Image (cartoon, rainbow, N blue to C red; front, top):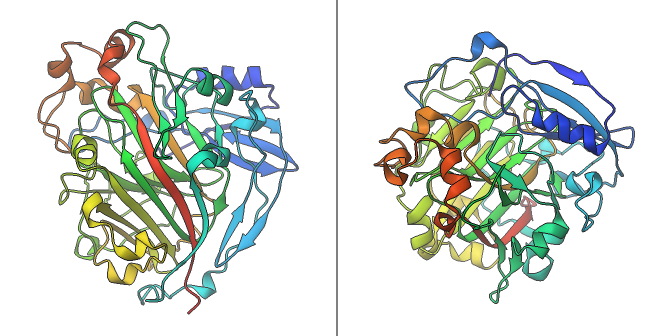
Length: 438
C-alpha cells in the first residue's frame, strides 16, 4: 500500500459517492467508520514519488487519492469474549448506501486476557460464538453497490439485483454461492458481488470454509479483513490471488511502527515475499503499499485450480496478543477439532503465516476489523500490463496474454463471458470464536 495520502472531506449523497468512486487516480479499498451517527467511507492514496514500477515482486495496489464521503447510519455495539464485536445497520434489498456499508461504535478489546508475545496461545480450545452459514448466510453481509475501488472491469450489484440475477444463491448443500454474469459480451464491467460482513471484532478467531473459489485469467478474488481509517485500523488479506495463480498470498498492511521479526520464515511454512522495500516493515505508506506478505509455496492446493480440485479447504485466522497467525487446511486435512467447533491451534503445527506481536502490537495496529469477500476482474493487480503479460510467479506458468489470446485483461473480461464458469465462490461457513478462558 502507498506512502503519502490526501484526505478530502465531503458530505455526500449516494450519487456523489458513486462519483467519488469513479474518479480516484489510483485504486483504493474503501474504509468504513462511524462518527456522530454517520457512516464514513475513506479512500487514501500515494504521493507521486512512490509510484515506482516493481520488477522483483508482483504486488497488488489497493489505495488511491480519493475522498471522504458521509452517509446516515446507525450504531449498535456488542462485546463478547476477549475481543470487540459490533453489528452495523441491517441490510435492505435495495442495495442503498446504508445497506452497503457497516457502522460500529468504538469498543476496546481486552488484550490483557491474551497471551504475551513471548508465549504461544493457550492450549485450551476456543468456543464458537457465531456461525454464518445456510439460508441466512447473506443476512450477515452488506452488499457493496458502487464502483470498484480497485478499478476493476466489474459492475458490483446491490442485494436485490444480485438475487434477481442469480449472482448469489444458496445451493442444495446449504452453501453460499457468489458468481458472476456470464453473458458473452458486456460493456463497462462484468456483473459480480462484493460483500462486507456486519460483524466487527478486535482479537479472536475467524474460520472460513470454502468448497470453491474464483480462478482463471482476469479474476481477482479475495477473502480479507479491514479496519477503519485505513491503514491505521489494519488490513489482513487471508486468501488472495489473481489470474491463474496456484499459490495463495497472505498479507498485512498497517500504520507506521509495525515490524515483524527477521526470523519470520522460521516461524511459518510460508515464505516472505520481497520487493523494493523492507520485507519486515508492514507500514503501508512506507512500503509502496506492499506491507508484509507471505506466499504459500508449500501447498499447491491453497489457491486456484488446485484448491478447487481438492474440494477447497479451511482458512483460520487466529488473533491474540501473541500476534496474527493464518492457517490453511486442505479438504482432506481439516483437523477434527475444527470440524467439532472446538478449534485448538496449539495442535496445528506451524501456521502458513505468522505475524508476531513482539514488535507489532496486534491490538494497536489492528482494530474493529470486518471480513470481506470480493470477486472483481482486472483492476490494479490482475489487469496490470506487467501481470497480464507475465508468467513464472505464484505458480502461474503461462501468461494470461498467451493463454487467452487477448492483449489486455479488460478486453478479455468484456468479451469472453463463457470463460468465467469457474469464477465463483462456494462458501460453507464463516465462524467466529471466543478465545480460551485460560
